[in-house]
Length: 282
Length: 282
Image 1: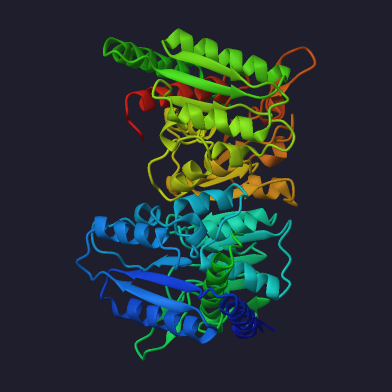
Image 2 (image 1 turned 120 degrees about the horizontal axis):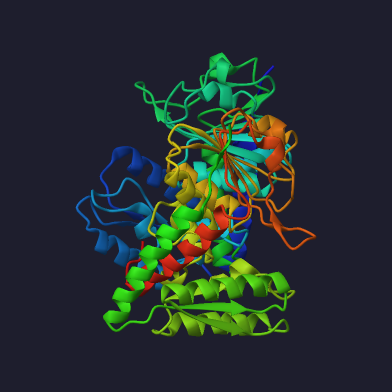
């Protein structure tokens, strides 16, 4: 029997915590504010930004969308991030993807002040995280760990395999798992026999963006599988990277898509914004 | 037959390259200068610093040892690193370990200007490295990759296992191997069945500091083994983390200790200093 590791309850708890903290801050005269810098007219990006802005407002966090348009030059994006970093009314800064051609995400994200880098995009945040120094983790990677903790999944001494090596999910998730004393392997598209590497995993984290990539053969009995993929379907829905039907009955637990990592990610982004507004750098 | 993957020839080539570049810089009016900040009276540290200073001078690089003494406070160490970062006559800065109680290596190393961080100690360097942005890698981790390249060891699609997760070797070596499209696993003292994890490795990098840790059972046939360990022996010699006798005949290749990673590390530290002096940030 494969347990459904829903993110709904955890996200609700986190949002309640954020709402209370935002109210306390407002009472003390500070309006927590998140700024999202956008330089694309991509539809799914716009949808995601609207959902973050909506969630922020519901918890009492102001959200400014700074739309520079799809023609924005890297210098303009960098200047906007630097200005927001200097602005004392802004507590969290997010740089939305995709970016215009010629703009390099991590290079631009270097302009985000680390204490406002609530989505852990500045390479300094990743470096500090790896070195065990205080830093905001990318919200998605943090959500993977938060879900594992929510379901009391042991990590120390266990084998964790991360499929995907992006700077926003795969690499930071691997660092966070390593910090928790898991033995960690990172696989990617050059990995030759993926199933041979993923099958021994006690914890399998999949963040590739390829629907149905992970099938029964990739999953060991009782493995805990965290599906970070969010792939749009033809009928307007979302599916993850894990073939849910194939894996069900074999894995010990699986996070659903939608309703798994996604809502926890948004809630953690807001919590990191509140931490920043309260001057509580992790 | 296990090939001995000596670092001697590669180190000699690198030193020749550095010597020529240092002479060219001197001809152009710049004396390349490396500063090593020391806050310990540890004997083996003093030996290491003397060997770096000697190697630097032989290639035409000035080396200043800034000895703050074992009683130095973190604030003093940070101030010294910041002053050297500002000093236009200094091109490379290294913070030697061990540090006094209460001093945190990565925290202090944050004060080293990234363009002078020739031993990749600043967490920003590690973050930039992970993100694929230009940065100096820790010289030891860079030496692992340089040796593998020197012996034409293929990495893309191969399985690399790193034993040890230090910020100066294990983690950055794993990042560099990942960048080269290897599938990478990181093991450490919490790893339960180490041999089961290391045996499938095409490339095994060991950086733990435990003599004889890696025996025949840990090594698959034809694996390339890079031994980063440097453990002093009772008779004043050095041994690595790999039981050389047990592994010989089984591994495809093994770097010796001494004479493997060590000399390449020193040579790369000097090369990174010359790159910095020449304004060629990687």
